[in-house]
Length: 329
Image 1: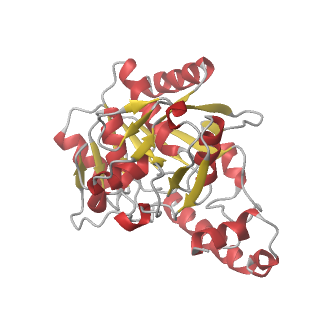
Image 2: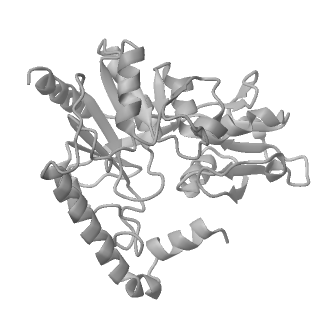
């Protein structure tokens, strides 16, 4: 079992090792409190940009659905006549430059898989860097964007933000409720009380906005073919996912009526062609994020399922009101 899945068993189960690791979580919390104090006291600088900044993040390590939400937010902002830009850490990329611009055809091995997907699905300018402040400043110099989306930047305190949105996995929630490394939490769950909006995928609690997933027609990796899930017929399909919570993708495929054999890989896995060869003629179906990395293999029988998300009109009004407050100071 890969290390990631061993860790998730610890975090989302009732493993006694989590209790033994509790003192390490206390040290983590102490370091977090010290860091917050240094920012609040001005010892560490906070940079405020001349355009509104919306941060989309989560409290837990691993995926919760931030990327689909950022895509939705970019499109919604465009419908309001904004010109959004997107900044990201570019996790999994190996680019050595301090700031890397990302386009639809960028190499995910250099800039990360999620930024390439964001560029493809939104048409927005995207920049990645270890320091999101540098990435944001580069976008403001090089483009006409008038609002910024920071993907997974909740804990990147050096970038001042006007709106904070936290995405919660509505099914797994916060696991055992402990902070790293004994549990999945990057910050205590009480942090939700200080953010502007909480979005939950799959199932929403009180004061959370439900984010509903919609599976779109599957597409071949070369983008030339498209079909409904029923097109797989009764054949068993090799379902591949290298995301934070592969079971979310596998469950969506089953709900779409596809008979699958699961193949879960660690998040941001660097695929090789052999990873997708299963010794039979069965079709391979993967997430859109994984397809970004696997198109170069030229597989004839490989497909991906794009996903869109939807949010309520109430959420739209709330976000629009927050932006109006920012506009008027």
